Length: 617
Ligand code: ADP
Image (cartoon, rainbow, N blue to C red; front, top):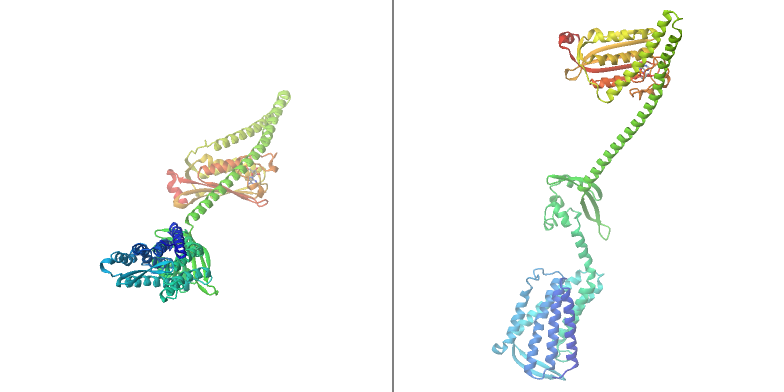
């Protein structure tokens, strides 16, 4: 076996080719990598077989190497076509499941060749000749050889066609990629033309495996180095598909050109049934949305949309699409489901409002507590005064009586005892009021309902206040008592409230008029309502005083030390009684223009006087 430089080169090829084949095999998931790996193996077998053939001395050894070589020869064009189809994404019918069909003819070729002795359909005769140092296998060709050749060329040309078309479509900026592909396509063609035309400087040496190896290297370079540029669109597509946001591109005529999985899921159709359809047909379930965004080129807003049975919120963005020449080409719709976010936001808002309300309540409670504290301190200061004054009077009169009773007249003694009685009465009132307030505050006060004559109560109260009225030279006017009659309610409390209001009016009015009025009204749902009012023409109440009028123990500064002062509990107790009875007490007043105090409570017509009451109302 002689070993020439050519054989050496071929052997080198048969080493380089498996190298590339192995590299491609490791990356076989990439489109084109698996056929490229097969092509590498084919070329390795081819060139190895060819090298051995050239070095063979006998026909039988050469024949064996030729047979091996043919495994590569028949499979290389198939690998080429497969690669071209997969890499350029052409002829998609030929997927990895069907690709074995391409191998039928090559397998038959191998069978024909191995059984050639029987039928001589592949080679009619075989001759071994010498070409310098090389042993060259020569043959007269049989019919199947031409079938094999035609098939191989068909595969080569089809693959070449796919690649050239791909080159044609590739943007010019990928020029390195294009050059690599052109070289890959051109090399086998040139090699073949030289070989067939017989103009090879190496005589009968077949250049095809060399040429194919150049192709292989170019393709590998292209696939594993330059194609990285092409990953970008793939990566972009991946990003698009993996996004949770719905994305849909619509061209200027309203046709959907792109849609991602999230968008398709929401629309409820597979992407293949959306792309290429009119957006308004696809979105027919949401006519209001179609109408709303028909002409909108740009938008960013939150909208509520019905999806199935529920209502959901979406953040919708619309972006105009312009091409390289700044021409408007369509719109990109991007939407995100923000229902959960909205719910969360609303919940947060509600919580904030609740917190704010609680805060307000706390502030109010704190203010009330502070006000209460202030009032209580003021009360203690006043009360010490209130209690001390009558007690001092009592102690003083007692001392006078003790020391001078023998010397003073009976009338004088009576006057002293009267003074003691008044002071004691005042203390008793005070004690009673404080006790009453404490009872109300602790919720121990109860209502005692009975039938009572309204006119009688008004009469009692006015009679009790008459001395006070007279002292301050006030005129009393009573209105409406005759028209009321007998009702069912807590007479004692009604009397107490009225007494308090009339006494206040008499107390704080001089040389004026006090009007006491009562009316029985039919309120809502035919309920009876007893309403009293006490109007005076007195000094009125300062606006700043109005706010604390019903606060227990609150007394106006100027009233402190007045002869007719109380503990500041009258109105507080009255208001609470009114509320306890289911009614209300209100006071309207302004300094200088008198005071109008009014209160009402629900009552029932007393059994005994139903007829009388109803005709009187
Ligand atoms: P008291 O039991 O000490 O009379 P009230 O609660 O009845 O206390 O009244 C509280 C304060 O309201 C009085 O001290 C007075 O300053 C004011 N006031 C009540 N009624 C009138 C009125 N008719 N005219 C003017 N001031 C009034």
